[in-house]
Figure 1: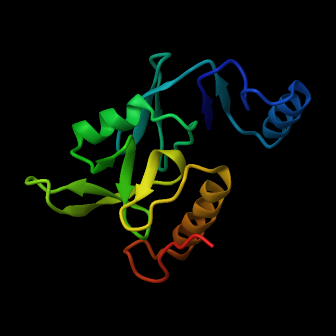
Figure 2: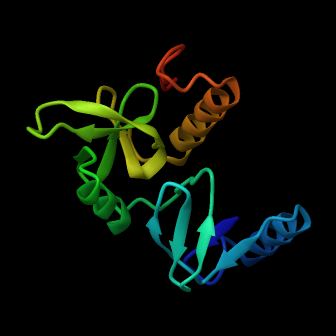
Length: 158
């Protein structure tokens, strides 16, 4: 399922490209929902502004270059580590939680960050699309390998 808050995909891109991508996704049987926002993310589902609750096993959050209130809300509610509007993650792209004293961090099980909504605690990178694509490829390899425990090769931007 692909959820887009605006009335169409790809924001300011040319209408022909938008139409092409929407048709391609429809042909590939993606459930695309426009004009609806994610209002809450839970372990096994997400809540939409339409009032619908959608079950899920994996949520990939992709957003623009401005910090999103949902990320701040998640950080505050779950005491996630937070820096300049972005969730902190370790070298394996696992989201971190602040210790009660705020002096250290621990990994949040089964929660990963990439792109604009997250930043490495040791190797911060700018919020660029190319970096987000490389992070997504890295995470896809990790998911497919089953090595999600912080073992193996850490993410490094080329």
